Amino acid sequence: MANEKNVRNMTEGSPAKHIIAFALPVFLGMLFQQFYSMADTAIVGRLIGASAFGAVGSAGSLVYFIFGFCIGIMTGFAIPVSQAFGAGDSAGLKRVIGNSIWLTAIIALIMTVFTTYYARDLLILMKTPEDILDIANDYLTIILIGLPVTMLYNIVAAYLRAIGNSRVPTIFLLISSFLNIILDVVMIIVLKLGVRGAALATVASQLICGIACVIYISIKCETLHINARDLKPSKKAILLLCKNGFPMGLQYSVTAIGSMVLQYFINQLGTTYIAAMTAANRVGMFFCILFDALGSATATYCGQNTGAGKPERLNKGVLITLLFACSYGALVFVMMLLFGKNLSMIFLDKSEVEIISLSAECLIIMSAFYVLLAVINVLRFAIQGMGYSSLAVVAGILELVGRAGAGLFLVPLYGFTGVCFGSPLAWILADLFLIPAYICCVRAMKKRSASTVV
Image 1 (cartoon, rainbow, N blue to C red):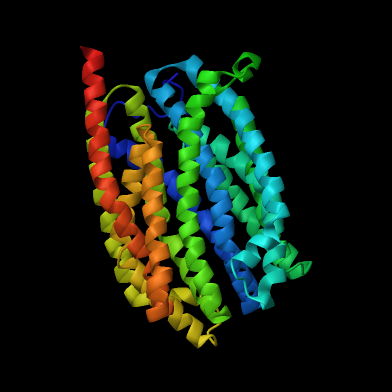
Image 2 (cartoon, rainbow, N blue to C red):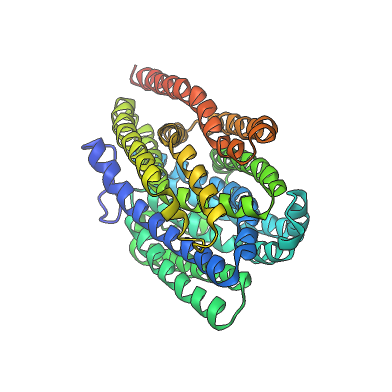
C-alpha cells in the first residue's frame, strides 16, 4: 500500500524532508486559495464599495464558524485513515472511508438546511449594521447553500493527504483558484451581480475542485478505492470517526465563536472599523498560510507514526517544524512593521486613509504574537494526529475565553485597539495548555508502545 507512487510513507526516513515535502504543496494550494479570496474581496471593495466590502467581512465570522465546524469534522475523519495507513491496515482504512462518506452526507444535509434557514437571524444576532444587513445576507445565503460542495472537496482532499499525497489536491485547488478569479470578473464586472456574484464564483470553483479530486482517486489512487462492502455501516468505524471528527469540529467552532464575539463588538463600533478589521484579517490570513500548511503536515506525520507504533519519531518532526514556523512568524512581524499600510491598500482605495491606518495598526499588533500562533498550529495538529482530538477542544475554549475577555474588558477601555489584542490573548491562553498537553500525549504514546512490545 505504501509503495504506490501517489502516497508518502512518513514512518521512515528524514522527518524534516517528509514534513517540508508534504507542507510545500499544501502551502502553495492555500496561497493560491488566498489569492482568489483576495481577488474576491479586492474586486468587491474597489468596484462595489466599502459597504459591500464590510458586508462580506461581517458575514465572514459566521462563515468561519459554520464552515470551520464542518471542515474540522472532515479533517478529523482523516486521522483514522492516516493511522490505518501507517499501520498497513488496508481493510481498516477502506472501512473508515466508507463509513465517513455516509456521515459526511448526513452532516452536509443537516447543516445546509439549518444554517441557510437561519442565515439572516444569525447576522442580526451578530449586530450586523442595518446599512449592510441585506448585502451580507445575500452573500452568506449563497455561500451556505454551497456548503456540501465545500465539504466534498475537503473530505476527498483529507483522504489524499492522510496517505501523504498533498500534491494532487493542491493542483486541483490551483486550477479552481484561477477559475474563481475568471468567474469573479464575469459575475461581478460583466453580469453586475455584486456580492452574489462573488459567492457564486466561490461555490462553482470549489465544486469543480471536489469533482476533480474524486475522479483522480477513482483512476489513480488504488489505496483509497472502496467497494459496497466498505460502505456497510460499522459501529466500530462510526465511533472511531466520531471520536476524532466531532472534537475537531467542535474545536474549530469554539475558536470561531471567539472570533464571532469579537465581531459582535466590532459591529457595534461601526462600518469603518468593520472594514478595517476585514482588511487586516484578509492580509493576516495570507501570511498565516504557512502555519496552516505546517500544521497539516504535522498531523499526517504524527498520525502515520502513531499508527506505525513509532513514538520516538514524534518529537523529532515536531521540534523541527516548530523551529521553522517560529522563525517565519518573527519575519512576518518585521514585514508588517515596514509594509502594513501598503498591504492594507490591496483591498482598499488609497482615499480611505482612516480605514487603512486602523488596519495597519491591527496587523502590527497581531503579527507581534505570530510566534505564539505558530506553536498553536504545530502542537494542536500534532496532538490531533496522535488521536487526542478532544484535547484540542480545551485549547479552543481557552481561545474563546481570550477573545471574549478582550471584547468584554479591553474594547470598552481601548476601543479598536482592544479588539486587536483579542487574538493574541487567545493564543497565549491556548499555548499555556497545549505545551504541557503535547508533552503528556507523547509520554502516553511511549508508554503504550512499550507495553505493546512487552
